[in-house]
Structures are given as C-alpha cells and as structure tokens.
Amino acid sequence: MGRLLAIDYGKKRVGIAVSDPLQIIANGLTTVDTHKIFDFIKEYFQKETVDVVVVGLPKQMNNEASENMGRVEEFVSKFKKLYPSMVVEYYDERFTSKMAQRTMIDGGLSKKQRMNKALVDEISATIILQSYMESKRDF
Image (cartoon, rainbow, N blue to C red; front, side, top):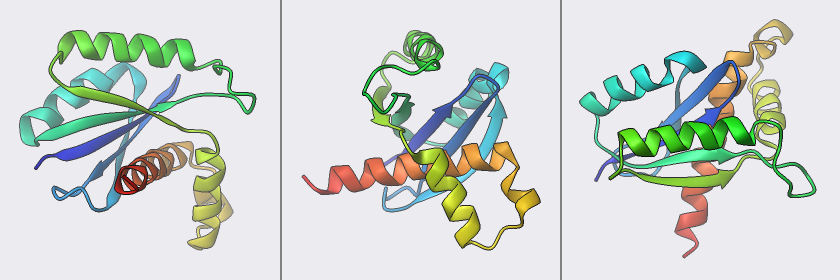
C-alpha cells in the first residue's frame, strides 16, 4: 500500500502532507516554493510509492471558486500530463487555514511562530489529508 500525498497549492508556496504507508495518519512533510513543486514531486515519487494525490479545492463560503482555483486547476492539469496514471482527488479546503492557526495556538506556538506562513500551509495540507482520510473511512 502506498502513501497518500496532500497538496495545499498556493500562489507562493505549496504545503505538503503525507500519510504513513498504511494510510492511517497524516503528517506534515514540508512546504515548497510553488515554482519548485514539480521538482519536489519528481524526487518524492522516486523515493516513495504514492497511491493518491489529494489537492485542496479552494472554494469560497458560497461554494463558488476562489481566486486561487485557476492556479490549482492549471497545476492539476500539468500534473496529470506528467503523471497520467496517478489518481488525483480534490478535497474541500475551506477553513483549513483557520484550523491550522487554531492548531498552532493549541500547540503552544508563539505568536512569531504562528506568523510563519509556510508552517500554516504545511499544517493546512495535513488537515486536508486527515479530513480526506476520515471521509473515506466513513464508507
């Protein structure tokens, strides 16, 4: 069984989280500059088996596409051309940044640490992946 890889794709940075090989728990992996994401993915796929890539779906509260949707769709289109056999699934990412901030506060991180946007993106990717995995367990 391979890992699940979650991507919180942003204009400047991409938060990345992965599951363990048994797909039980999500862990933050890293944050990558957006322009380096395909280099990172290529290297990661050479080291690890990945079954599904979960991409955060950026929607607004009224269920309309957010400003970032076009960038996410462009990324997924290019990804599918490079990795046509890889399963890609979208997962709603609304509230993940707020949940990441709450997680950081609950974890006792200082205000300075909580201002680290890269850490927020990594935690957001972890929340996306954990939520995705929990939604699959319900079936």
